[in-house]
Length: 348
Image (cartoon, helix red, strand yellow):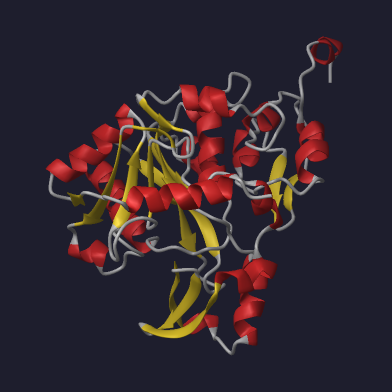
């Protein structure tokens, strides 16, 4: 680090290691890897690792959603919605919705809203590709980051995996591998915070953030370490290669094989599987997304949708008007959503 850099207090990968990674706060989103201009950082099972000399630019540190530079106020200020709730954050509207596309409904976790929005955006040329979590072709149910370039790839990635995935590694692929300029990003709250951060934090890799066309957030209470989840399922005689779907409903973690329920256990029983870094997260509803989507508060086979920005409203309303989605009043479901969001926000 040069004397001039030291004088202004620039923080770099060494600070990220000391303040985030070694303290087990790193959420393994992959943004630091994609932000590095000299590809000096690699993602491992244990987290980001420096594999060649650091350029001391600070992009990795200032883009990180868990670094001391992170400011929720800065991210929230970038959303142009008028309404604000102390628990649910900024929003324009909250509704229930579901897909009107049969091929999506056949594969969807709940209402199929995320997949449908992405397919709509690609077909209307709003984006050239999108960052999603897909499934490993070799390791059953292990999520892997994917830059989906076709609607078929988007459809193939549908469904919730419940294990952590460094989605934002694919953002680097989009920007530098394919040279895309309009990219959709889908992620859980920590990944959404990272994606928004790289768009608005001046010291982050904002040229990378400029490639992001919109951000869709997934409601998330916590995620599971893939290896630990497999061990737990194995202890219950579940062959994960035969699993057709995982789901969480009414406080139960459910496993389906060939469409039939094979296991249903209280979610608290999987506490040993929860990723350590999830314990410090207080965001259930992806507060900094353009559109947040999840199942809490809506009836079965529908999704709860929180539209947070005018950009998100344009995307969502366009899909509704073009016949991709149908909408219903969420009613008292909002109170259910607020109750659970408040529970996560106040957890010790």
